[in-house]
Picture: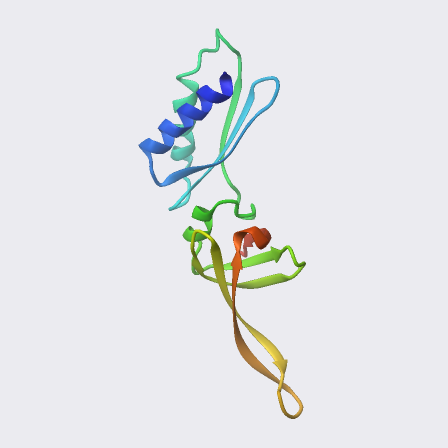
Length: 154
């Protein structure tokens, strides 16, 4: 019952601010509610407050006691939804695949089924000694991605 009500209230909050989207909702046995959100343009403290108020002001503590925490996902949190990939086009990602490979490249495109990464690599020359820089591109289906994180460069 509580999960259904919270889910409904979160959907209403997302409808009021369409740039926000829900990443996760976790409700522990003691009604400890944890909500993680993200946004197409990032998430401000005001966004978290608005979502928190939407949920908190529409639940009755007399009926069921609860604690509520609304947070934005961290910069190093792995990407989980297609919408997160799409908002990070142009940024550098580190992607681990089911095959055990790790690719660090620029996210060039994100469709509903795949992501496309580009990067430069040093490879041996086809003829002679030495190495040459080559441009690589790989399109990876989401189901082949174990983990993808935005790489923060300073």
